[in-house]
Image 1 (cartoon, rainbow, N blue to C red):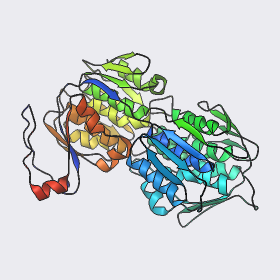
Image 2 (spheres, rainbow, N blue to C red; image 1 turned 90 degrees about the horizontal axis):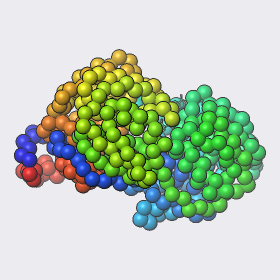
Image 3 (cartoon, helix red, strand yellow; image 1 turned 45 degrees about the vertical axis):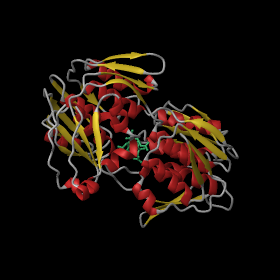
Image 4 (cartoon, protein in one colour; image 1 turned 135 degrees about the vertical axis):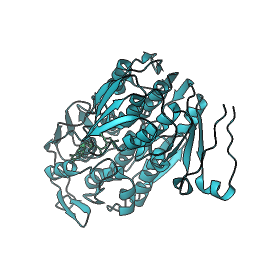
Length: 448
Ligand code: UD1
């Protein structure tokens, strides 16, 4: 297929990007990696024990490396063996998380719960906001206080201390004002080593919360109700080592299914736990996709896509993390769609980039109104956050001509080898090192 060369942009001189030649049908099978959001919190949970924890099915992502750096900075040891991480927290020598690591990886704030429960003290910088919203940690702090911690926030650092020498946190009843995933996980980890019973009401029900409970139970914790709005944790004296496999990444699986839908192709995606994607599969079917479940995987085939309306909600509602990728699909659908983002206040930045590719989208507050177009047209676009970057890749797969997707520092945080996976099923994607390009001034050619 001849593809015209495209002039480099000023952005191209700054960093690498993905060049996608769109319009190809995809076929075959795609493997889903372990869940990033599970793996990150499971890694933090290893601080709760002096024994070795083996986590299997951990994806090779920059966020995982960042969390490993955080655990190492506290005195933990982290080794990769194939797709496993072997972690040991016997020699934790610090209760202070470095600002630079929390600043570059919000999830490293997860350390506050286990550090406090294990050592009686934690000093962790406030993670601050990010591209998609302010992302407060009020619920985390409120719950730790309810368990008896003295918490102060000064100079941008949260300091939490269990008063009294050698004292433990005390079990408590906690009600979350919103079902925050991070707060639920933080409080579950803290409560696992607390004295007595804790109850978290209005808890998040996301699969990653259930996965955390699975690891903690494997380590000897007593937890009931994970996956429901009320989680009960009976604190134990100590937690031991475990060997535990991370669940498949439901957001990556959803993104790969959307790759089939947006290219009007047929792909099998495996492994998938369909219950983790209930609201997403319903919307894909409503849009006209056919989906078959064969025990370990899902096969999606699509010919025509109709517009649908969707609203992001806490699990089991439609996940905010698939809003941007789904919006790319709807930009190519027949008829009109409406997408309402209810979780994060600033998570429609990809709309402006899709408009640059010819999408017809109008926003009003947290809602996008979409009129599907027959074809998107390739353009240089910026991924403004992790899932927005994936949305740009999907749009590029469907667009006429070349799409250059910048913002790979986001994409690489959450998708393990996305371009390799998609290339193996027929996509044309090349990662281009903009710096090398400038030095070498090569001629790009694409095989027919
Ligand atoms: C996690 C996921 C992220 C996903 C999000 C929502 C990880 C590492 N990240 O983020 O990919 O998009 O869940 O599914 O697992 N909130 C408050 N007060 C608080 C805490 C949260 O008002 O104290 C609000 C937030 O502003 C947001 C909503 O609750 O509007 C959801 O946030 P939360 O569930 O905490 O998301 P994270 O755990 O940060």
